[in-house]
Length: 307
Image (cartoon, rainbow, N blue to C red):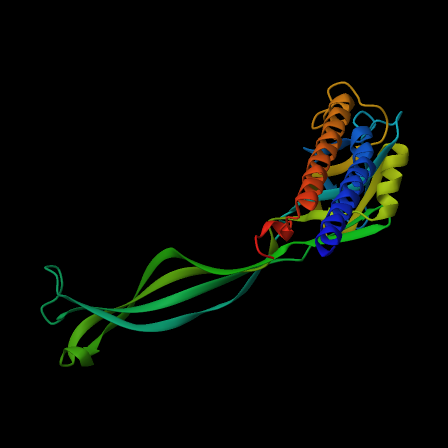
């Protein structure tokens, strides 16, 4: 009696799971039969438009040729990227320099034309510095697209460069040199002029990168086939290019050239084959269980003998 109950219970469970799995497949697959992937992009390149606080720019992404506006479709994801370039308007100001004694002294022997009373020449090295400061204010791009507002800003750049501008020699006179036993020497001041440039500002390319749009903007794009935007912000910058990516799916009939889908007859044939195979497997297992019950043999549970 126990053997019969255990065998029947396993058969009932297996019989219940097969139709349940097939039903779930039939519920899921019709959506895939009718839906096709939808994706693409629109790009605005080579714009080179100067944006300033007094000159805002209004543009548009037009996807009318890419979206199947005559059929039913759903957009699930819309992403935009904008690239900009700083206008590089650096403001130059000259700072205070000065004359500095480097402490470097070079002594030369007396020449053939030099008086015998003069032991030689002593060069005293000085440095004259000219300081130039370069400043460039920060630029901030403000993008308004749909109900979304995004910002991008230039990166700060700080560096100091030194460039020699040449030397100038001026005779200081003839007098005893303490570094040469106070012998008479000609003394010269050798001045090396150095241009020091301090760069402190904001420069270079910048962007608003990979920003996802909200539901309102996605719906506007799906409804009209285009999407307007506005560029404003702080400072002067150049709008170079922009790209919009979209993803979704169509819910109408399959269009010619649609990729990534199996034909409907093939899917239905596959589902029917799975159903028939599952039914045959259950029937064979059920007949085997009946034979075991008649012969008085105990059917192992879970395929493990002795359990």
